[in-house]
Length: 182
Ligand SMILES: Nc1nc2c(ncn2[C@@H]2O[C@H](COP(=O)(O)OP(=O)(O)OP(=O)(O)O)[C@@H](O)[C@H]2O)c(=O)[nH]1
Ligand SMILES: [Mg+2]
Image 1 (cartoon, rainbow, N blue to C red):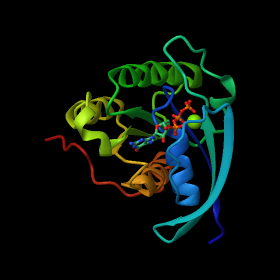
Image 2: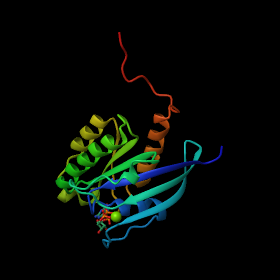
Image 3: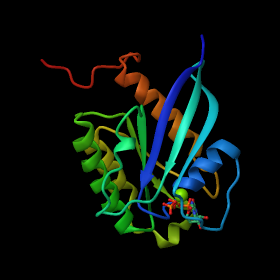
């Protein structure tokens, strides 16, 4: 089968690790220094369930609750990675604001999405529990993962999970019925 082209955007509050996750996934390395992003695009070939993908990953600038959702990220994107840091309650609040704007601007009720709580290696500074993250993702019907870009913990899982979510949205995955009416 030929590779499928997929465009993914990674969004969230500033300094949560969007670029670090992108670079870890694409280049397999971690940089400790902080260099705020304007916008970067990466490409990476990957394979999930014996399907090859050519992933175009758009690493976006950090947003806050007052940012206007950039319209270029509402079009021709197959799925989103929304990132907060487990050490920052503010970043957890901002990710919810971004989500609301995203649904508003796309006009869709469901968008393939993975919610990511990054920086699990900083567990001493944890401000957002795993349950809080999971509950939010459940409300969104999105996938949820906690990661560490620094320790390369579950980083590839983000993108593989999102590629599967995109396939599900296209109706290409057989799913068990989630509720049975009797
Ligand atoms: N300990 C730890 N630090 C991390 C992790 N991920 C990112 N960082 C650090 O957090 C800082 C910000 O990381 P970036 O990847 O630049 O964050 P960003 O979300 O791209 O930031 P903006 O581009 O400004 O929005 C850097 O100093 C990183 O080294 C992680 O998993 N663990
Ligand atoms: Mg960045």
